[in-house]
Length: 150
Image 1 (tube, helix red, strand yellow):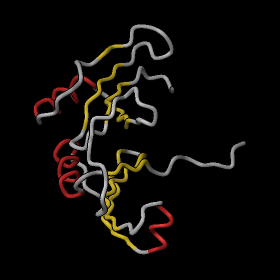
Image 2 (image 1 turned 60 degrees about the horizontal axis):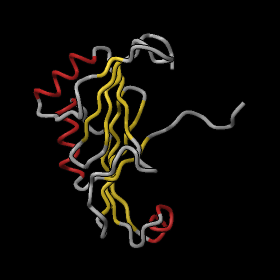
Image 3 (image 1 turned 90 degrees about the horizontal axis):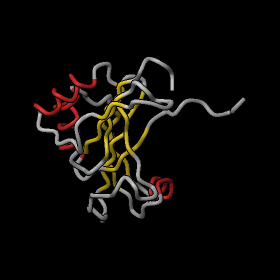
Image 4 (image 1 turned 90 degrees about the vertical axis):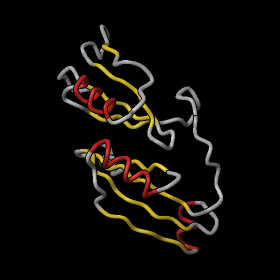
């Protein structure tokens, strides 16, 4: 038996916390559980960023928390990492009706990488998914399950 519990949250660094929070509210009707800030030598050492000054917020997607972080430090703002790049990640959002969620977000201006893909066979047969990105280039996925636990 593992001595580890559930995943507590997934953290994503963003260019502009306020703009990102506004986007997630507009797209998913999510409001932050809280917004906080921090700085100082202890924080800098803990996060591995010299002279770190950051603001962060927690957004709850059901039982999962996404932490959005904004560092007020010099950084590389280039987005556009490929999903094939080592270290790339994405956040998958479970939806009960993929087509309805897809149409809703299309109407709000989301540009998807493709139309939803139905998985015809294999361990995820009967599931569907579609990818898109947030304004920071973070890959998001909508996923409709086939009702079996994966």
